Amino acid sequence: MNDFREDNGEQATAPETKTYSRYICTANHGFAPYAQEELRRLFGAVKSTLLLPGEVFLATLEAEPEEVTRLLSQNLPVFLRHIQPVQFQDQGDMSALERLAVYLSRRQELEGAKISLHVRKGQASFWQDSPGELREWLQERLGSLEAEFTVQDPAWVISVYADRDALYAGVSRPEENLSSWNGGMIRFRKEDGQISRAKFKLMEAEKEFAIPFAGFRNAVDIGASPGGWTSFLLERGLKVTAVDPALMHESLRKHPALKILRKNAGEVKFRENEFDLLVCDMSWSPKLMAKLVTGLLPSLAPGGTAVVTVKLMHKKPMAVIKEIIAMFEGERMQIQRAKQLFHNRDEITLYMIKY
Image (cartoon, rainbow, N blue to C red; front, side, top):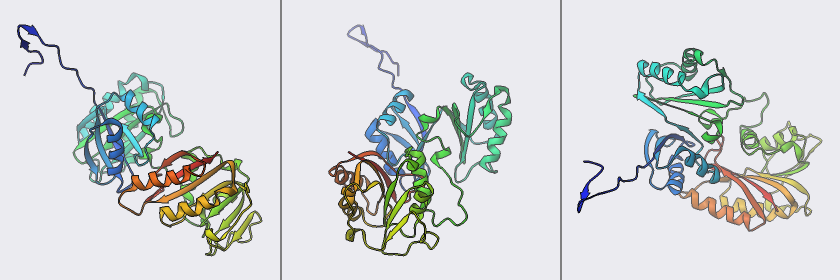
């Protein structure tokens, strides 16, 4: 069918050409449908194809790439953890990889630049070896760019996703990907004597939200046992009051900067403005957690920070998050970020400041 037609002897105007952008999108396992919903609310209809069930999908958005970046930066998503542009797509085999290398070597912005090369594989990929070996393979073939390949502070990110029968790739600025980590997966090495992996959640929040934990003086940790978050705060030089009826880890019990209250959160009373930091990682229902924490907010000084996890125990997490945020906002808490971090599981992390 022609783009032009005649009507009453006059030539009709050409229909507007729509612009589409394509991205590989990633969420925590099981939360891809909510990441898709976030995109639908921003961009209208979203055509998507699952690449890894519940976690990774290919999305086509009716928007210019610049518009995608602008809208996502102004409406930071909770569940959409990472995106990578798809500017190159080919069949899944070695000849496609050779064509990708040629394509990338011709991208002028990459010449002499600091580049981070992010490689991921689907559940079943035509590339049989590790993602790290594919990264090395590509890096060798991009020698003509005379680029500096780095992990820290790159100017550009090359993202590659090798699936069973397709190869996807794109080039972007790190900030355009929502996370500067490959797939949004920030990994920490478990330390000797580490009390629990829950500590990683606070370590990730420190990086993701740029929270200056070392600048606080006096913290309260609600539901602190066995002490993963408390240990992190003590390492940052804070005085900590830990509230939990259960025992704290034996390595913490005699710490000079730690005060332990073996009580339920609903049983304790503190002086007004006693703390400049409140943290909470309780495995309780969202409403009960919010009720307990908001009851203790008078002890948080104006300008103080709160970091809490919200457990998503029900089928409507977006509605739960909206309700919990409203509870905190009603107690003079300004929400800085609500995000499902990589180290969150069936929960999100709220970062708030009291005004």
